[in-house]
Length: 263
Ligand SMILES: [Zn+2]
Image 1 (cartoon, rainbow, N blue to C red):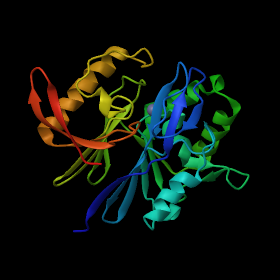
Image 2 (cartoon, rainbow, N blue to C red):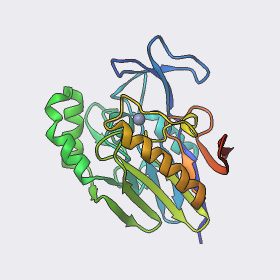
Image 3 (tube, helix red, strand yellow):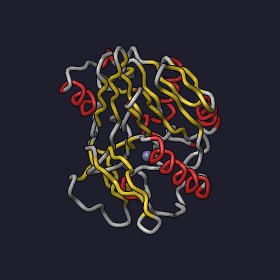
Image 4 (cartoon, rainbow, N blue to C red):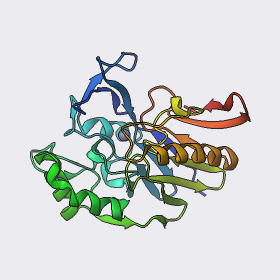
């Protein structure tokens, strides 16, 4: 059996204000006033013949000082070319999670991973299509390009399109947000997008105004922590700055889970 390897592809740390523009800051920096500090980490899973991404990063279009070269450079360091990526699973259709799927590096739209199947929630995709007119022109162009040229494979609410990979509709942060699972023997991973976006949300109970359904998001956040703890999934935190992959070890009624950092 080929070895399994999981690597976060750090795209940078950003300050995100109410205008939703991702402004690049240093890893150690504080965010600007009234802004959130968010890092971006698509995850690469090498599993035998398949090279799979969980979310695609910001790309060049939706951030300030961002470029598709960051992710491609990260892959290059691992001696992987853009053509070798076989699948990209997208947790939810926000542009900071899928912006890296297409780029205009050469002046016209191109698929960043030309041979990859793009795996998205069918309902999520149709929903985005139905509200596209409320998005900016760049976002509309991006969507239409992907919709016509991308090798899109739609996922149902509970789907396992590739051996060892499955998705579950959890909602919460967006209506059709999915949790992404990779389960191959002892290699067990969960990526819950913005429902568990950072390590800091572990053991915290809160409802976030920016969620589509804050209560649902809160319930799923709790349930997925329990599931990871019981079934030994390492959690991949897409917006985490310091420790992007971690395990939940012991559980204590008062203190909650003990976190073991894997990265
Ligand atoms: Zn996000």
